[in-house]
Image (tube, rainbow, N blue to C red; front, side):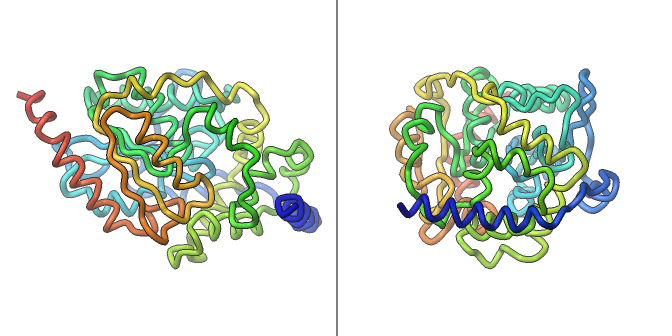
Length: 329
């Protein structure tokens, strides 16, 4: 009953928002605001333009970080600041996200996400690296790692999405009004039919406050970033395409094959993917460590950047740095 009431309320809010049409923002305007001196753009053979950044200690161990659904590489900026003196930090915007946005192929599947990651890794000639991902990006990370065991030295999974079977088992769980409305609404065909015509600001506000557990890091600037990146020309259609295609999901390789060290970070108050999933990953992965942060939501790297980055640094020093040095010799 609680879930039905919440969906009705969300539907009412959306229908009211539909009365206010908000057009797309020009790509060049959004790009000028959210790119920085470290921003680079890789043009793929199919014409896709991938936004990425290569920052930090150039000679340091590479750490490649993948953002979550509806987010962008900006979510990793706090870790770049905290870890950049010791490590080389590579971040990128997946198709349908950030300053990559829509791609000519219209392919926003899980396989396309992995191909985008592979293209950036190959472009930068990264032989071996630590791979991290948040939420959906965590799913990209562990699936990629399972197919590239020789390249991925370690995994950092932050509130990561799990195998599709886990999603199917948890699809109908009732999280009430604490979860971001946008994800439930995007699964509804009626909403996708009108979403390109509505002003998503209300959803951006509710989604950010819910995902970040109403953290003080949810400022007007953060909400505006989510809002304006979603309105970047072509991105709304790309988001709808990503949620509308059944082939966005792919068969998941077994987690048991991931024998490299893995650090699992989760917020205890995560309303997007429950913290119980941290222990499911821990049980499935052969060599994992779990840290659950009290009072933290879905984005520990932004909500508690100093503490979460310190945990990553400790993990790398304990389990990976020595191995990487030996391989370099």
